[in-house]
Image (cartoon, rainbow, N blue to C red; front, side, top):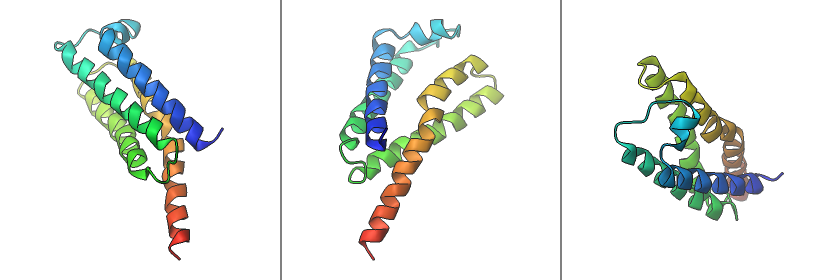
Length: 129
């Protein structure tokens, strides 16, 4: 499977995940047996942001080298998200069950996003020599 195809599926995944959390904001909390947050609207806002990332990934999947900035922003979010989760886990602001979201929303995408950025870097290095 090509990296462009993986990025396309990341876009679809983010659109679906975002829509589910906007339309059914309690779904993930029920699924993971986690108490609802006090302001569920913030969770819906996160769903909107994730959905917007999905639009970006779909655009970038046409040519990730050309749209490397979208891939970089996505990669940074996928690195900083787990860091924030670890801090929330240490302070007991979030339960360990939340790690399932980190696994599927962030960690599984690290390698393909990193490879896209690596190949893009090498591509532009070779064209500027």
